[in-house]
Image (tube, rainbow, N blue to C red):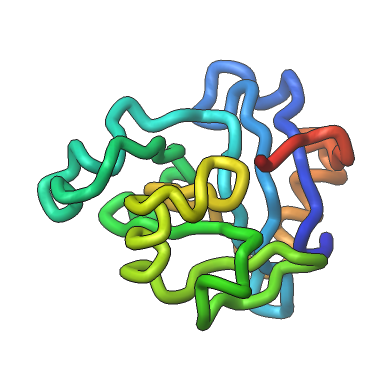
Length: 146
């Protein structure tokens, strides 16, 4: 699996946390893999979180079951948001979140530029590949991130 790939859950994952999940893989190396569910909106917007009450309403997505105490983001505006890690193409993971929020609040960037997640999905080394091989996940190129 390579960073920037998309996967969808198969029927083998029905009745689990991952039922109907579509994910982007943001990292894959000899330590494992990391990704985010891109099609599951979190029930609250960022301004509904106490720490970010000063922000304008902006959607958050439920990125996965791991570390739901932290926010993560993927964007395609490295010209404005510094410090992100290249996923592939023009997609970046993370960066200066304070600056990203400023650009969201002044409408310089929007939902077509950045996606914010609470939590993430993680796999140990070769675990994701084994799940793909067993048929739990289907590699896809049809998933829209923005």
